[in-house]
Image: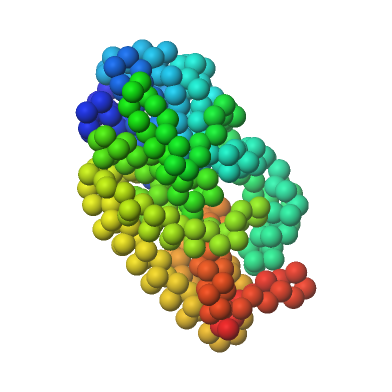
Length: 326
Ligand SMILES: [Zn+2]
């Protein structure tokens, strides 16, 4: 098998684990200090991904039981989906922000909650009438998501030690409400999960039970990370890169442009978030319902920020929600 592990900084290794969907690779990181190791993020729970991880551990000479900590950026399937299997393999203690823990159970449900269905319909998402066709996160990921509840909550500003190596937790809400990045002050290395990706922007959406203005949180988190002194950025998707401030600024610009586009789309007659998303995102009719949902959630995140800024108004009538220019 071709090597899937590379030392990107002294004692910090990047592992490329396969995903059965796009993006097709997730990077997880092994961090070492003398005999103690930690694994940052897990990959998805697939045979392919677990076999790749095991091969990487062998290649680098890391016995699974020397991994004492499993520290995760957020609860999504490619970051936390194999946490149960990895816990069993290593016996490591599992770390995750408490706001993520609340989502873990929801992600596994194979029947959608009635309030979620009402939420989707109110925003115009055309759902099938039959119960079987209704979307639920547990159906989308199936066995790819096999999480375990963490023992340790991760809080903003706290330090976790891998041997004597310090990892500082930087809470970066936005992509998810409890998303955390990890900063290594001695090395000026920054593991950023999905917060700061070199080529794509992470999904930021309003969804049932989530925060009301996540895009505002996300943009604040992009400002927050620029205060750190960083020499190397280690993202969950794509290659390592250097200039985190430049990339954070680009991501902020991308959303400013999209905010303008979506504000323009509210001029004229009031429309649902779903209708606006069809104009903004390129989706084909054959796209799975989850893609339409993600596009609607992302559009809603922009609409809500515009609403809080007084640029757009939300109208609710007969349990249908539409948006119009304020
Ligand atoms: Zn994610």
